Image (cartoon, rainbow, N blue to C red; front, side):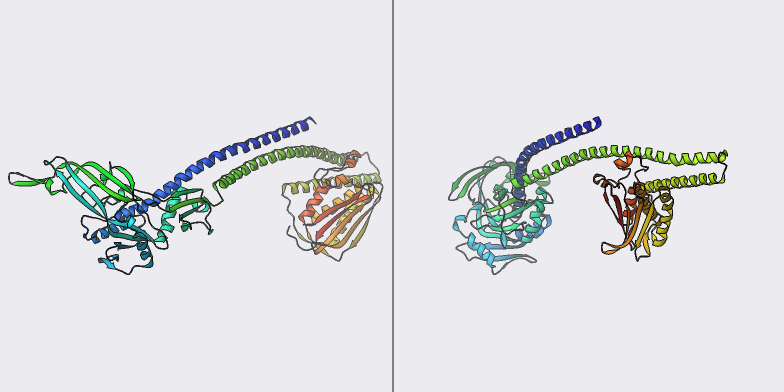
Length: 638
């Protein structure tokens, strides 16, 4: 009783502890979710900015490679275009981005023309412009953007996507050249010609290579399962250039970033390649140390740009000198401090293109809540499993204790059962051996007693061995076709001695057309014999037992129905659910000291189950019991 108290006290304590952990887990995960949401929002914002920077950098590099700067408006640009294309194809990660290269004249005063650039041979071929190029020319001929240096390299995405790079005119005018080797001042003028290098972009490369590559860098390789990424022009009626979403309607973005960018490098690159291949006397590092002031003028940006750097001045013929020593001569390249200054007006129109990111599972709040709920579900699931485990441990402990008690009773019962026949056999044998019994009639009586107790002992041992084999899984059933008449005759003979001893009568009612049944002969013999022996034991004052065999159906298949009916003490209703459990003995048989070990009916049920049959009991206290076994006739998968 005390042990039971301790068990239930422990169980209550564990329930309280688990409930406390569940409440704390809920609060902790709520706090973590808020922090996770803020962190996730910051990470996605940073990742989206990095995505846009890398995405823009591809087109910035393309624009830098194809930036054509001339020192004369009539200069032939074909060699520069050829070198630009070769440089791009040889060094870019996405050489297929360039579909074709055009040169377009956008002048309002001169005849406009569109020229397709070819490399073999290097030519600019006049072509009839496509509808997409005509639309581009029409849209970009606005005088407001003429004669202004562009500070952006921004593609125009669409069914046909283009990147335009104005041809620049670089005019360097020497202002003063004082004493040789001293400071040289140069006025730098940057202007924009009417000719534009128009690059037609391959949309498939952008959509299937560039965007996925950059997205997998910042959003992981599984980004396509988690996020909807979209590139769109956010006009009154948005135009979606790219999306990996399945729905035609874009979800509201959790993070949106403009593709807008601006760079002074678009002006002062001086034909220097982003891949490190400069093509003018200016060093690419000239961009270092630029200073600018700005003011908005006429919708554009007026800039004053100045830079100071010590560079080699061999690009100016005045800087060269000849030094003769003996019969030899050499060029001596001098260096000097050089100042550049420039004034120009630049176009600074904002870009309408935006990058949107949304969670496929819903908004950021929905994603965080779902993650939180999933974590809560996992946590509560673990706590629930722990709780169930505690309950099961307690239940199994209690059942183990009950089983241990039943096993002790079984051992005690078996010991008593074994001792009785052994004692009888031993006493009879001693009397015979010591000559106590002299008459032949008494000797036969003693011999009969020894045979009866020996049979009883043998049956008990067989039953225990059968049960042990079934419990350990070592019992192997040898299934064959069993002759029914032979089986029941052997059962009758086996039961006869016990029936005679008790003065009882076994009635047979065998009404089956079946000649055989598929099963294990020894197991079925033991099963039915046990039922008859139990009926004999618990018949009380009744002297009649009925064994009835009929044809039946089980699962719409032919079956044999075997009934063993006694008219004895019966089984209480509350005990009927437990009678097939190992070691179980009813209260009345135990109190009346009826011989038994509690494994007989358990053994019967296991044999019936092994033959894919069914067993049921119908009983009423004081009126007797009937055990009904239904066995399939046909071969079963045992």
